[in-house]
Image (cartoon, one colour):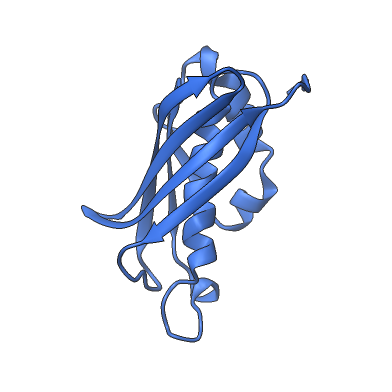
Length: 140
């Protein structure tokens, strides 16, 4: 994981390494910092819907993974409270997507994060997630 060296983000790294769903999709964590994360995924043939384009759920899952890493980078166990995505361009088999998550604001136990999903320089989706820190302390 290039760019993932800061011990302050260790909880997010541990969470990602235990994430079987993201691993099954071939998602890679490429950058991690306080309140920020970048992940990458290649669109495989099993991710294409009946229209010959990537199923939106896979694009959402990539963005959601970046969101999860960014909001868990502060330490407390944090989950999604809500999320929405705007699909901008069609994605096809073979495309390599990158999702960049950025913390916008944290207030109390809640936060708002924006994630931009790109194919190269082209923006293909925009995602906004709201996070909530749980009261659970997890030994990661």
